[in-house]
Length: 423
Image (cartoon, rainbow, N blue to C red):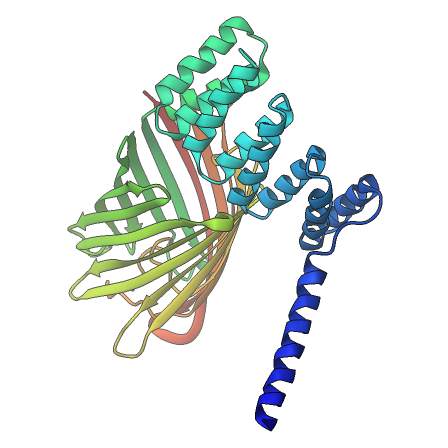
């Protein structure tokens, strides 16, 4: 009986504590809802969104038709990447009052941010019922077509809008973008030099001519790479593919051949890229370099888009007899008008086969475990008509000498590029 009594007391205490917790969590809002809404907005803009959401929900429990509060709650969910939660709130708002135009706009943008263009398309169709021939919603209709790979139909819609209103600046800019996206072909040239401090080595020259084409399955880039080093000239032929596998999932497949020792005889690679929530992207793959022996290099990256900025970290791991060679590169980009216009900075340590010339000495012996540190800055921009694209970059590296470990070269880098796109 004594044991049962203790169990009974424990049970009573647990029930009490649970009821107190539930009561605290479901505490009803008391006070002026307008003042509460003002307080919640201040909290949200003061980076206290979780607390703001609790307050907004408590207001809505007592005033469920206070649609401005519900709209702001939906916005905070969208800011946090909680697109499904935001969708639910917008559905309730638009069911209550389908004439709230700004919430149609916000709800459609929420679907675009959440990579749900088909949901966005359903909302656009419904919005046009209430706001017939509204130019903003018709442009949204074009965006849906673009994001579902119907770019020609998107362009047709935009041109129709411009026929009725040639002064629509958003339509003008969007037509320029679509015209660019429908330019399936590109030709480009890149050239770069490495200059050694104190003239410890002759200047090294690098050239690339490339042709690219976008298809409904992905894009392909064919390259001819030319290196002039150590008094020799070598040519490499390369083909890179970026096939789309599924929504948010694509691959990198590459192969190259050369009959000169300045390049590996065969080069090949494969990598998978996956988009994640919160604007993250990850990848994992490998590169193969076949000189006299074959070297396999494992690589992976993490990227993050935040506003108009992009951060990325990529690492390379090269197993070998003396241990595993490691390298890493941190890249930052600040975008301007679009992905073709940006300023970038890169900082790295170790040999990165994706970016660095293959490290060989005068005897053409490849080495991958050299110590090095480097930094580069670059700037890319395009013409207004999105047909011509330019790039320039400079950098410096501190590179260990192959035949004199522990001592370093100081190497300066400079390069330029030009691409033209056409149908």
